[in-house]
Length: 249
Ligand code: ATP
Ligand code: MG
Image (cartoon, rainbow, N blue to C red; front, side, top):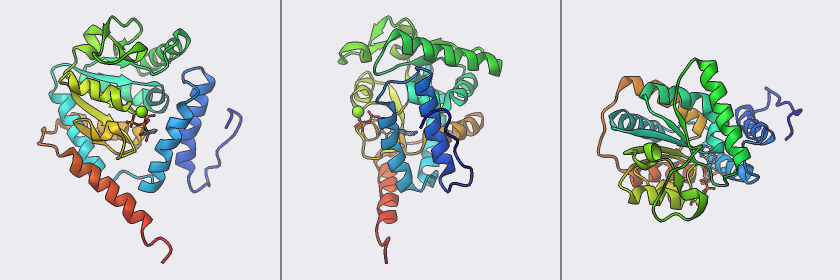
């Protein structure tokens, strides 16, 4: 899809196509790696099976994540290109509600892409009249066990954070953050991914829907519970299996 293509509002999956268009447009602006649309497509496939809706179990997980972010001493939102393209504005609002920084952490790091993402968030920051600290431009610490640019992070951001929100995170990076003893809070439409299974709390829902729900839950200051991540993942999987069974009866 190129920039000139217009999405027809009468299309039954209008919302999904609009979300896809945001990724396409961000790609044109140089904010994303070529593989971004493939990662997005994997998410889209799971969202289709979930009925492109927020399940009650995902809403509960979102409330739990809000509670953990509110209660953390040093929370950080660690965002990749897709998360910024789809919900950058809402994540700035969330960071401002929490009084925490955003750290840009991208898989394929180039100065151009990093510059485009930093510029995009700074513009949105201004537009919203916010003063959220945006980290990631000058990494000065490393996540133990991760080779190359993916291990790069900032000392006073991700490295020292006690709770990290990592939407659309890669599985082994998620594991490495868990090994550092952090509360790792994931947003991932795939309940089977290593990230979903290997984190503290996974929200199986689309990132832009989650961001809107977090903005609503954070001011309510919910309480942290004994969260059973596997139970929530099983619930999402059960929903997918129900959708798929008896489809043609
Ligand atoms: P893992 O490394 O955890 O096993 P993976 O390698 O399959 O997972 P990645 O490419 O590392 O996946 O990360 C992309 C993940 O983000 C996928 O699991 C995909 O379902 C999810 N995803 C993509 N787009 C969205 C979105 N808009 N909202 C929520 N999740 C999404
Ligand atoms: Mg992966």
